View 1 (cartoon, rainbow, N blue to C red):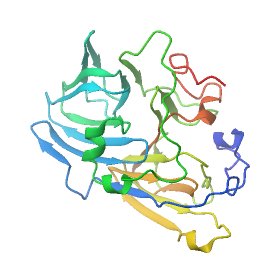
View 2 (cartoon, rainbow, N blue to C red):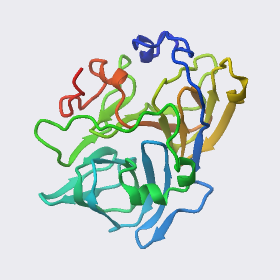
View 3 (tube, rainbow, N blue to C red):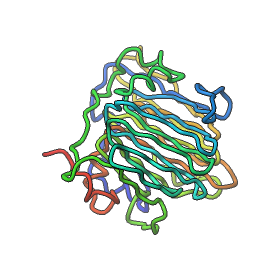
Length: 303
């Protein structure tokens, strides 16, 4: 359910009822409140908080200058978000070193790689659970000891025609009211760096909607948000769940499982920056012409 000015109102499934698919079991949300919990890793590189969903792992790092993050025999493509313009990193693989400026999204190929912080700053790395070391280091790993209901097993999208390599994209792109946020995808992730909102969200223009079979990770980078979740009623009252209204400052993540009806309201008087993360990429967003800014680099699965 979207207001008419919301670009998502044009999605093919925007008018489907919440009961479009019958579910036999629900699973609740997950929170990673990095601002009030100890980091999972504290070392010479800085501090790193790690939390996960069914198909993704988020590693949020406040890194020192010259910090080095190494991946050995990385199983699949992973992503890096650099939120601040003042932060610069170098990404090294077996083919050389790429310097990436701040306020960018980076996709790094499988195999051996290294990220070096040229300047101190924040980076957010995104992995699939095939990176077992990161999945096992997650603060909420026990919640995912068994597969969650309603989320299919992870399947990567096709490789680019010219192969996997370091690719980076600036987040400094013009706004377009016909496009929803700034969306980039790779074989493993879709990242939607939403338009920052200054001040609280209007209470008469929210967007309650649901996903039948994929989870959403909402990463709060600045400001504060309330994530509102409601589960559809079924004929089995034993699986009903109470509504959730989850207030989160930043940095934090909220993992929203299907088929929860959800919407999020910005709460801070300042800048509220949210990033939505999906693994694998969303097909409905990918089918919208012009929404995925790097769609020429990464093909969609065959129909």
